[in-house]
Length: 165
Length: 453
Image (cartoon, rainbow over all chains, first blue to last red):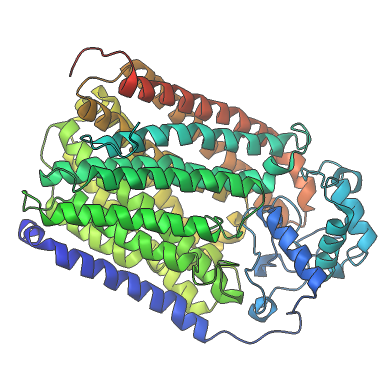
């Protein structure tokens, strides 16, 4: 049986591959996209400086170590400075205006979803100090220093940090 | 010098050599990243190799540069050989070869300068995306034309996998990089995250996995000197992988606020992946039953066999870690980094290297420059990869447990420091293997002419 299909296989093969692909796109991309909730209270559009900061965050690849997603099992447990201070579980609406979302992939530093809601996290100067010398603030961290960034870029980055409430 | 020179298997040779060179660059980039995890200030904070950037350079280089080039090169050998028809156009092949290398080079330069779209494996900026799509289209066109004028009517299963791969990869790359949005390469909010992982998952599935399976299906029967165990099984494996694998990208974001039904599809599909994986492996292993001696007498066979074992391990671990109860511990940790290395280096990479060493003597008409060096490379990569698996999995479990016990994230780093040191040390084996491979492959192609095979 197998051989017989093989002999005239090419049209089946290409059609079958396309069908599987289109099915995948419809079921796992298009239909879910239709059911997305609108923006939540935490979703926000960015000012010019905040957006600039967000793009610097992207340019330096910050999200390869810092997640922005509080997962159900770690609510009340996950710790940045004080036990359980990771913040509330993130909801779909929180991300509604982000392009792209920075969920993260490999957590080497704290989750930043609600960084601006934590002590120090709402202070611009603290962020700039931390970016310039991470080891001073968190001894033993593997985060590199970003002291080489110009002052206005550090300020923009800090402005973006303050949007993460 | 005519860079589009029309010579038999010129495209294959070019891709195989490119793969070897990119493997050196990619593994060194990985090594730099590993060193930064151990000693962040050691390399002096040079912005263009800071961890956030070198990680992207590493993943793109090893995936598209090393494994991608080797598998595309192997496909340029398998298609004409299995169809008993010369490649439609070596000049188109060469054009795709040069464009591919240009795109990857441009990718390294732009990523190191911070031009990135920050979606995993879809970081390359828009102009490079277009370049990649043009290459994929050129290669597919070249294969289709070869298929149209083929002398061999029967299509062996490797051809099925290659055709399916290029159909899928082109559209996955097109949609996944949201090329209609040149500025960000993304759509918005949760749908973008879902799309990003549809892409991230399917590029592994239908560029690397299916092409590597095509290579394994070709090499194992020849090296074992026996026909394939079952063609029917191979077709079941082919169609089930197309249906299952294309629906499960969301298993990367099980703990994210994505619709529950979508997660259910992703998890059930991930468990269902055991069907295509086991049909392929049962088929390959029953083909080589009682003939492991033949397989291990041939360095290409060894690489492909090791690749098949990693395929089993990766694809047993994959369904397991798609379960929410497992993922609550492993997600975001080094466990996943270990899993990624098992898939790309252990399975696809070792299978691709098997393809390289199988094909080289057959396109040059003489034996490998050194079978011994290839053997040394095999052991370096096998030991390095096994070490990666143990070390990264352990580190991941320490991180996951620490987080769920309320430990401060950065204070867990000293606890996994030892493992990060071991990981960087093992990286030396991989990079060393890559350098030996480049030398051996270069000398096999351009070295002094030795005995003919």
